[in-house]
Amino acid sequence: MDRYEPIERLGRGGFGEVWRVRRIPDGVEVALKQLRIDQENCEGAVERFTREVRRLESLSHPNVVRVLDKSLTGSPYFFVMPLFQHTLEAILPALSNQPVRFKAIFESIMDAVEYGHREGVLHRDLTPRNVLLDEAGNTVVSDFGLARDLNEEERLTCTGQGFGTHGYVSPEQWSNAKTADKRTDIYSLGRILYVLAGGLAHEQDIGSINPVLGGVVQRATYSNPAKRFASVSDLKVAFESAMSILLGSVEEGSIDRILDEIATNPGNLIADVPRLQRVLVGHEEDGDMVHKALMKLPAEAFQYFEQTALPHLQALVTTFARYTADQSWSFTYTDQIGNHCAQLFNSSTDVSIRMALLKTVLEVGASHYRFDVMRTFGLMLQASASQDEAHYIMSQFNGDPLLQQVKDFVEVSKLPFGLSRLFAA
Image (cartoon, rainbow, N blue to C red; front, side, top):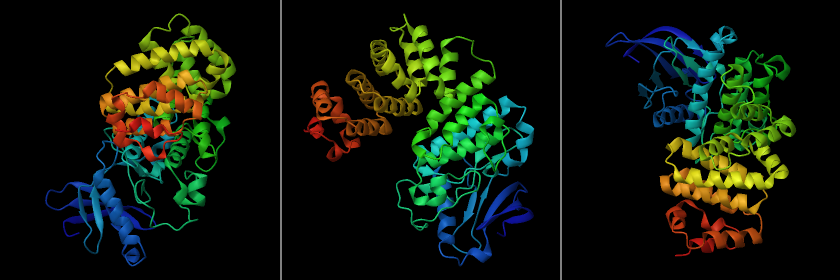
């Protein structure tokens, strides 16, 4: 602490304090988060603080706050981070009539959370107070004190104990934090979007905000986690679609406009999906158009499409699979392809569609050597619906050399219906 001169206290929480300080060697002002002295003897406090710092140091993303310095070997325990002028909470009133600005801010928050999930980290305390901004428009997510590593057992929380910030914490996390998964952060993101759109922090009245954003918020904040967006990637698609409509960047009646309306209002499938079907007629061989369309199509709409126009959808999925497997994609986008194909796979009951999606994920994962996509392929195999489907999978994939490439990322022992034979040497 002798290297830093305190200027003012910026905030105080249950375990720590954040100070604006001046770094003595060069006079640069930074922010210092310190474990409160009166908390140092509390059970688990030092360990939790240390884990927060180690976790932040393991994350490297422009929208996650950086650790500049630290002291974790004895009292006082602290770490230093860049100084940001504002919290999102402080500037919320000014954003109500600035959709372009709040779009950029929310995209930055989603990017940070999606990156954290990819690295196996749940934040579990996403609030406007924990989003920091500077005068240059940079946005970072901070305060990982309640975060959890998905690949580690929760040791600092008792079963049945919940925590989080009222108004932003998901119901399942509030009742039992150990049960929370990635969808708890999606709930918090939905609540942040709600207040960005003009809603009040401690209530939820979807009718009080723009209905285009209201559909996105509603789906992100269902009490039942199974009804929420399954991933931040899915939330991104719906949010981008909503903002395209709000900002008038898509033409009325175009395929992009129809897809945006489906993504933001899945309750209107009976009207919107037939419109999409009509627009796609004659474009079944247009790989780029079909790929973009199916990647934006929510699972519910895909399922309704299958129920009402199965031959048409089969033709589209065939084109989608061929085109998607033949392209070179960014690593981040390959993860989106894998996750979305898995959702469409789980929503479908048609074996030819399910096989095409399964093969797409195998080929994209293997050709890009993307671990997460290869694991997704294994999870899709685990979700095989019946013995008959397993036999069909065996006939389609047996002897495929790509299977040996992905073998190490598939939990072969968990495969049903004898599918483990696919990976026999």
